[in-house]
Each structure stands twice: as C-alpha cells, then as structure tokens.
Image (cartoon, rainbow, N blue to C red; front, side, top):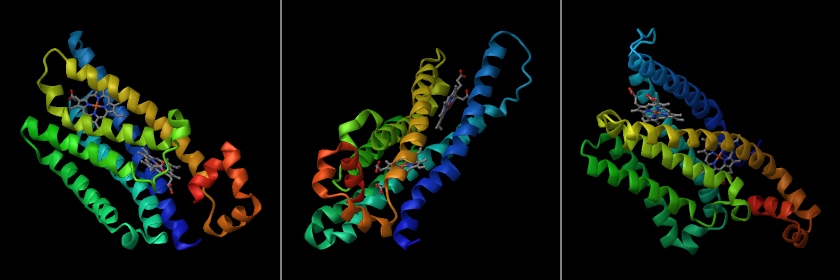
Length: 243
Ligand code: HEM
Ligand code: HEM
C-alpha cells in the first residue's frame, strides 16, 4: 500500500473505529434518558440512574467533536492531496492559503462553541463553524456528487455535522425549557441525524469501493477511454473521484 492509499483510509477508519461506536453509546443513553423521564412523569420509581442524562450529554459532546472532525478530515484529504498534486499553492496561492485559514478558523470557532457561556456567542460560534464546513465543502477538489445529491456522502455528512453542532448549541435550552419544546426539537432533528449516519455508512462504503488504489488508477485510465467516462454516468462517477 502506497502512503497516499494509507492517507485515503484515515477518514473511513476513524469513522468506523471512533464515530459509529460513539453513536451507539449516545443512542443507548438517549433511550434511557427518555425512559427515565417518562417513568418519573408517570409517578413510577425508575430503576434507571439519573446519571444517564449527563452521560448522554458528555458522550454527545464527544460525538459532536468526532463527527465534525471526521467531516473536516474527509474534506482535508481530497483538498490537500489535489492541492499538492496540481501545484495549487503556487497557481492559486490566495485560494490555497484561504482554505488553510478557514480550516484553522473553523476549528477555533468549534472550540469556542464549547467554551461559550453566553447564548449569543454559542449561536455565533455554531453558525461560524457550520459556514466554515460549507465553504470548505464548496472547494472544487471535494467530490459532492451533485448529479445524485439525494444519495451524496458529502451532503449527508455536512448535514449530520451541522445537526451535531446545533445539538451542542442548544444543550442549555433543552434544560431550561420547562415546556420541552427544545427537547422535542432535539429529538426530531437527531432522529433525522441518525438516518443521515446510516446513509453515511452506506454512501461511504460505496465511495470507498469507487476509489481505486494508486497503482490501479493508471490501469483504469488506460482501459476505459475518457470519452466513455463522460457518456456513461457510472464511469463518470469513477472519473470524478479518481481525477
Ligand atoms: C444521534 C444523536 C442523538 C440522539 C438520537 C439524541 C436523542 C436524544 C433523546 C431521545 C433524548 C431524551 C429526550 C427525552 O427526555 O425525551 C435526548 C436528550 C438530550 N440530548 Fe440528545 N441525542 C443525540 C445527540 C446529542 C448531542 C450530540 C448532544 C449535545 C451534546 C445532546 C444533548 C442532549 C441533552 C442536553 C439532552 C437532555 C438530557 C437530560 O434530560 O438530562 N444529544 N437526546
Ligand atoms: C459520520 C460519519 C461520516 C462523516 C460525517 C463523513 C463525512 C465525509 C465528508 C464531508 C467527506 C468529503 C466529501 C466527499 O468526498 O464525499 C467524506 C469523504 C469520504 N468518506 Fe466519509 N464520512 C463519514 C463516514 C464514512 C465512512 C463510514 C466511510 C467508509 C466506510 C467513509 C468514506 C469516505 C470516502 C471514501 C470519502 C472520499 C474521500 C475522497 O474524496 O478522496 N466515510 N466523508
């Protein structure tokens, strides 16, 4: 395996080893929090310990960090590998250095989101982090599968990351709101996030299958004429990834 192939595997490996196990733990705690709350409302003596709430939030924070981190890593690999391959740092130096600055600014605003105590600031940092992700994803080096946006690893990934950012930003609102409106909004948004995570497992595995090892790329490029890639949408997908 070439070094480039190894770097291509870092993102999927971290998603499988870190993100998906965390999703399992967070959902387990979420279910227990809900069960306990409903049992207490019904006047039952719940056997579920009250600590499940803070466990859900503590591991939820780690889930949010890992999803945003893995999304940035998923974009950093195609962006920087193509920057170096196509010499973008000297050809389009303003864009290249702006992208580096946006990576740093996005990481910084995400860090400040966890530190912010005032609601207005946590909203600002949540918006800045989300905008940073969208701007990074808008770089031409990132494969967005616009022709099949409804089954796109990029759109699902960015949407899931933004939902995780929103979860962190509304944590205090969930606790403060006695009418449970924020709690219900959180449940609806994150059940949708769960579907997006399932989609990430499927679309990520599909995309992994479409990307050949470096030594295979030159063979494929010779076997399938470029014109055919463009005419045949399936080959087109492959070409777009392997470019
Ligand atoms: C896939 C991800 C997630 C799902 C499916 C999920 C779902 C849930 C559910 C079902 C509840 C219980 C609601 C109830 O009491 O009826 C809950 C509570 C809560 N969640 Fe999440 N959640 C997720 C991630 C997160 C994240 C990333 C955070 C932010 C750190 C978070 C923060 C909270 C908070 C603050 C509560 C209230 C806990 C309590 O009452 O002690 N959740 N969540
Ligand atoms: C929550 C989990 C995940 C998130 C948030 C996420 C996010 C992303 C994002 C934003 C990108 C860049 C856009 C793109 O190229 O589509 C990306 C690329 C990619 N992801 Fe994921 N992903 C996740 C899980 C996975 C998994 C489980 C796999 C495989 C098993 C995977 C495989 C890939 C591949 C192969 C790429 C393409 C990299 C390239 O263009 O060279 N991802 N991911």
